[in-house]
Image 1 (cartoon, rainbow, N blue to C red):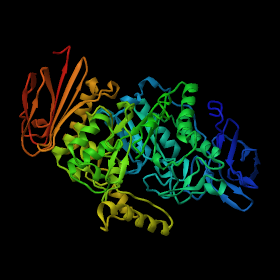
Image 2 (image 1 turned 180 degrees about the horizontal axis):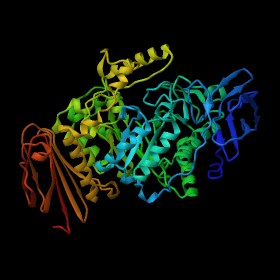
Image 3 (image 1 turned 45 degrees about the horizontal axis):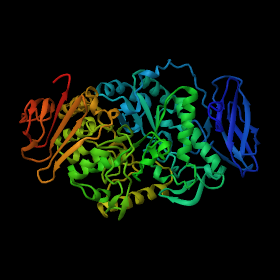
Image 4 (image 1 turned 180 degrees about the vertical axis):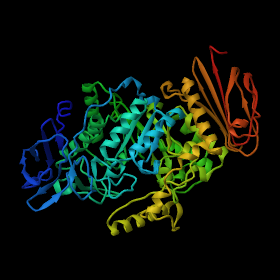
Length: 621
């Protein structure tokens, strides 16, 4: 990889045909050695270069022999490798050298979807199956493909303490979690997905490291006291010696592409990446990924999560942006969730009307420079130059479910009829849709926050911290204990439900919506059409119209508990009904809406709590 990307230095233990190259950054260390435990215990001296990197080489006598080690620094302290590829015994113990067999099945990159074609399925490895491993996911991939999913997003897999964690407490960004099956399990899953034409997105955390097993500061100034994050000191992206810190994380991103064939990275909470430099770390990362892609003739994507509502991160450089590829759009979720549930606590204070849902449908952002009552200031910026294929929308995700008081899913909060509406509105929005594991069949188990720290003081700090977080929403009520195993176990999804009763029916609704979305090109992000919207707050009705020279599609939603009438005040060529969720096959009571719309000044009745979709193509008129 060093030959592919200019000025990026590989770190960690990197095997070649007959030797292991060890490289670790430690600019202030006066001595550093490799303490080899296996295959035979020995201490290997290292040499320091001008940039503060310590290097050594170990000759391999037998390929694929087990090699474990720590770094002995300043002749007195031993720590795992900050760029460890595998921590088989946990976050405090020895690192292991990974020697992959690079004989993999030939990859046909033409089978993988483009970013604007993604239908994303977010999952947590530990709770997606009872086994909680990468290999246990593999038998379910075919079923997800049949549903209409073409990309999976895996929550962070960097080594964390214990066996249960969301992954955002990882402390070895290069090491794949041992309890999930380690790097071999991840490789096997990715390879299987690619054979099925499924892209793989990996969630990575470049804004902080977890508290337990975080030894980076023992080696060098990876952190800075210039800024304070919710998790402590910020990662050093713009202070003294930051160049090598940037190198570490940029190399990490390229490592996932190069060694695991990951298709895209989702960058967690970039609003907590503090950087006031003229050349932002995120911009440099995007440039290096582009350079890597040009030299390998591949394509990779960087997807960001940010609560700033600043579209410049996804604008091209020619438009004054940083050339990241896509962004999670929380406002779409907030607008839909707050309206259907009626919740107004916390950040939902800025949402709750159909006017806001209409705005979300038109441009993704609702907070686009307007006043936020939650923040007590103006928030966001208009996304005038953002394409719809750059915004990822959802009705649920790990944050919006897991950061609730009791981790309740929408299946607990709203009716079955409303779950069907939510599916249709999300999947027919014209943005990139994301599903959170289990929503497609109405999973009833919660998705709670959980940790498995070894330090009792840390466990208590987590309990207290979660309680503080919930105060804005729920006051001083007691929630669940995130530190006990039972909390983790009750978060494991019940996959078998997708074949039972109304769960199977909801699965069929999602499948039908995804089938129609794929068939009707105007609903796909590539068309980049902003819909016309109509709503009536009093009558609780909402409609959208996507239209171009060839296609027209109208979606009618009645959120009310009584029948409502939509008035279409334009002349219509024949529009055929493509979906009506009040029909008996979708567990409705029978549709009130006509099978075809034609003519002008039409009045269309729509059942209570229902969604209807009409479509016209000029070649079919």
